[in-house]
Amino acid sequence: MSLADRMRWSRVPGLSVMIHDEGQPLWTEGFGVVAFDEGSAITPDTVFQVASVSKLVSALGILRLVALGQLPLDADIRDLIAYDLPVHPLANCDGRDPITVRGLLTHRAGIIGRGTTPDRKGTRFVKGGGGSHRVPDVPGSLVPRLEESWRGEAGVRHRVCITHAPNTKKSYSGAGYLILQHLAEQATGQAFGPWMEANVLRPLGMANATFSLEAPRNVHLAHGHDLKGRPLPGRRELIPWSTAGGLQVSARELGTIISVINGGGTHNGFEVMPADWMKAMLDHKLGVEGARRGTRRERWYHGGTVKGFRAMLMGFPARSGGLVLCTNGAAADGVKFRGDVVKALVAAHRFG
Image (tube, rainbow, N blue to C red; front, side):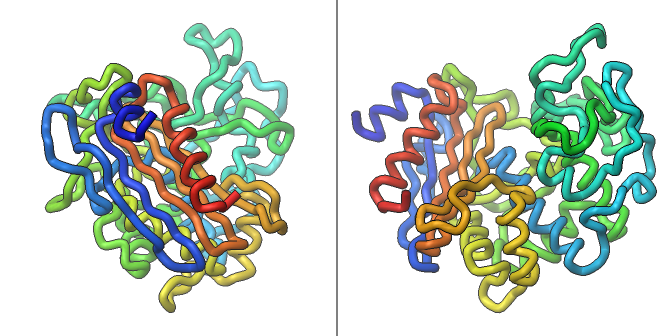
């Protein structure tokens, strides 16, 4: 089945791809259209929501603050936050163990997440809680402030709380990244999005990438589509939890992150963080997933899944290479479409 046939079968209107190899962009290409009801072609500079790939890029900013001495990596962070961090009644712990930046980055801080989300009656934990709060981008949508998200107000289903003892299990947690967002804002005195743009994205040459709630202006935007290939109301959802899922970026610009990570934290003379911190990020999976560390088949990666969009960012340090994939369809076959395209790209370029 050709790519075009598979896109039609999966009801994915468009995708954008970038490939890096030997430290340089090798090729980038767009396929399909921004929307089934609009014929504008996807290009390498079309901007997508990349969902939880945001967590990896956010982690670069958080670790930059750690390297600069503005945030601790392993000290308890509760004295640094402005809000309460209660223990959930179902938690089998007293909540006294340290909550750390390291634990939050690795989803091991004991914060509400998948497998530790309370049901509607609060009588048991269920699977869920991994992502971030989202609302349709339509007039009248209630967008919570960070404090409201933290307290489970303004339409947010659950408050941020401790649900299990830190370091006892991995529980993928968007709420943990909301805490990181608050910590960064406390440390810098700025909203996370503008700080990231001024201190990470723009110095890297990522001119259009943004963590802003609003869609970037004067750029080519992909429109999100549901499982049946229908455009989302408002064409996308708003994601106020910036660190967890709020990045909007093109495949071409997201490819810069491949150069940063494979390049030891520096790209085109700009040092996001020192090389030893970049090594620690990969060694200890601080905001990034990885496999086969220290071998010729090593890879690091982070995927993103949100209503209407799918994304993948993957790197292969031994080749100083990697790939970016962004799609504007939820895919009728779930995340399998994304996985199949990634596998085909890895095989074609002999990365794995």
